[in-house]
Image (cartoon, rainbow, N blue to C red; front, side, top):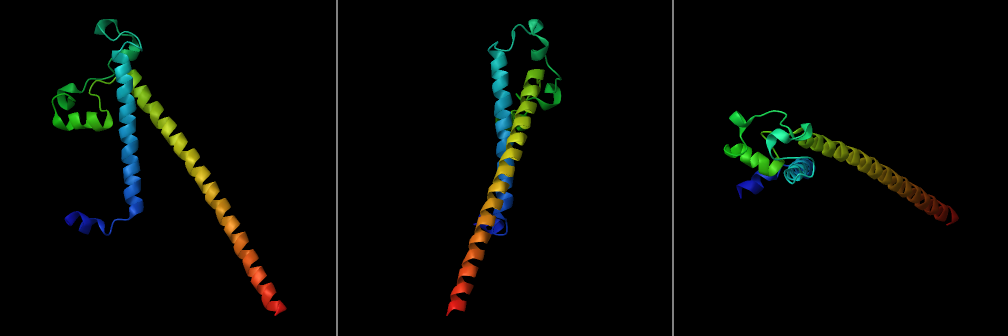
Length: 143
């Protein structure tokens, strides 16, 4: 009951945008996590032992002292939802960046296409309305 009372004033547009953004971040995390799994399978160079790893599989930084994704419950949740890594590699960071480049580019293309379609549809409706008005005026003048 409280949930429905609090959401009465919420605009659906804002809710949908928030959910869309959240889903984009979750998908980015899944993509980065899948790249980590590829690394563990040695598809992107040697993963184990650590001293034989190529630069692409080396740690960029180590935040496991304060922000461990294995012991701190908040960061465990962030790893599960958003793909957080306390010891990311360049390959994972490149994958995350690549995901966002593709997602933003696709979003821009899709929004532009949708705006053009809406503008074309509005123009068609205006023409149809003008023709209907002209036909109604012509029939009044004949009568």
